[in-house]
Length: 240
Ligand SMILES: Nc1ncnc2c1ncn2[C@@H]1O[C@H](COP(=O)(O)OP(=O)(O)O)[C@@H](O)[C@H]1O
Ligand SMILES: [Mg+2]
Image 1: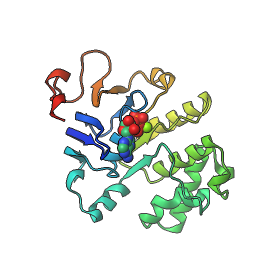
Image 2: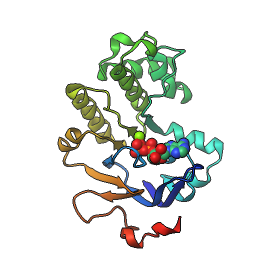
Image 3: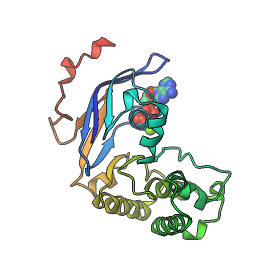
Image 4: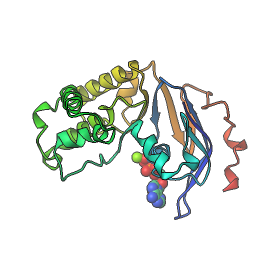
């Protein structure tokens, strides 16, 4: 379960990016997050992955309270999730195979498990032939698929993906969405930020949230997110 309550984020620049944000996602759900550029999607994802601290509020993901996690427990938490960063964060001093294998090395999987799992996921993202390449030599769409493979290779309990189909054409984007659906049906909770209206329209059965003015709303009318929702005017926007 992902639970954010009363989350505020103000950067040192003084910009108030998230304001009393509330979000609840149950285990096994598949949700999309949309919002204009600069709305705070990446900030929210950095908070959910422990790369940014909240200014105030609580973030709980399964048994981990990210607001007060020791660095040791943060490392354990990160092992249990998969993250596709908007800027990929690939390691350019090693091959595609080694990039994708990283979560399995950290989990101390044996050599044969590593080879089997990495080969399987590279096949699924259509990059088997690029296994020995340095990711620096790949196109933007190929790098993005390496990042997706690395995020899914260890069957994480939660996948957080920031615009994961941003560099992919229509066909590849559909294939990646199919891969996400398969992972979701095997139990991975999915939270995916996207700008791609087409992706959302082709996946109408999924929950859709809009991030706007630092808050998050469930799409489809008046349904704001989570039980803690308060209308904007009551939400204490003038606190910050
Ligand atoms: N490290 C940072 N320091 C200061 N401001 C930041 C930082 N990261 C993001 N911002 C600002 O926060 C706002 C939200 O950014 P971001 O979370 O990247 O939005 P999105 O992913 O929705 O485009 C933007 O106005 C951006 O300039
Ligand atoms: Mg972003």
